[in-house]
Image (cartoon, rainbow, N blue to C red; front, side):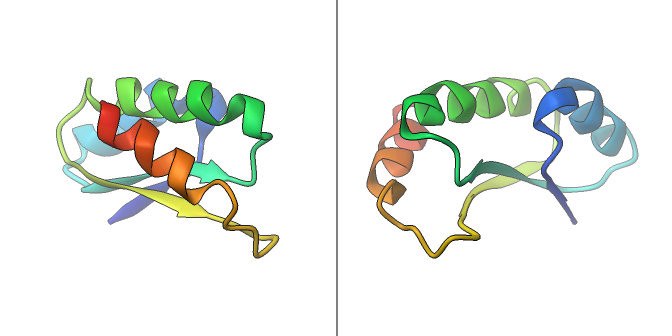
Length: 79
């Protein structure tokens, strides 16, 4: 299983691992600015929908900041 963090090259990275049969989890949130949360999360979800084997999406914080988790869940569930 791959936890894919490569936002800058997400399409290429997702395809690379999908082509090799690896299930993937999108690391769609990791302490981004609140203004960027919806855009970045949606970009991850749209890219993930283009390949087979995406089994989840995760909220990760390195700052122990869960203040955006509800907004993140709203964006994920809206897709």
